[in-house]
Length: 157
Ligand code: HEM
Image (cartoon, rainbow, N blue to C red; front, side, top):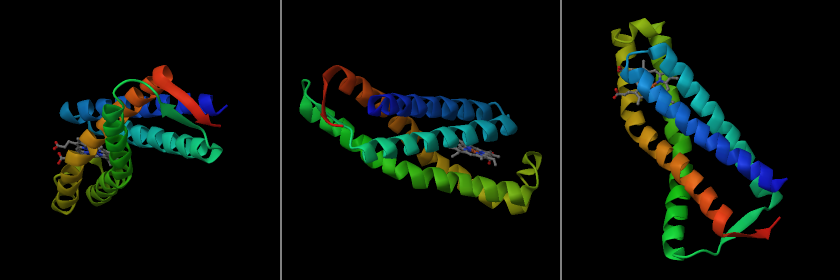
């Protein structure tokens, strides 16, 4: 049961990373509507991940890494955990400024309206950090899962 939750949580984090990449592609190609949908989907998938992750923690399921190069594994794990915690406020900030920009603009065709511009400039400033952090967390989450799958030993649960 806990192993299944763990599997689904990693599927969710990988899908959220893919939705994020799609969202970046859409805004680069000027499709704002698709950008918004992809990013809302990425955020929803990340929320599902968080719920599954916290459920797994609540169940007390844990694996210990018993493979080679433990120092490198811990560096990976610690950077992943710190940036995963940072990703939540970063994503909320990005969404908040986008939402305020959309409210001020009225619609996504009007984002250069003076009232909306400042919000979208802030959105751009936030996402400069949000996107790389999110991608790092998604990629390393999958790597850690794969490493524990091969070199992990269940210590609880
Ligand atoms: C956490 C979720 C989101 C992330 C990570 C994200 C990411 C991005 C990125 C990477 C850019 C390009 C920035 C640049 O060109 O420098 C961008 C621009 C933009 N985003 Fe988002 N976005 C998110 C959510 C949203 C939502 C929900 C909306 C719609 C309400 C939205 C509307 C826009 C618009 C209109 C632009 C163009 C801004 C401009 O050209 O000044 N974004 N976003």
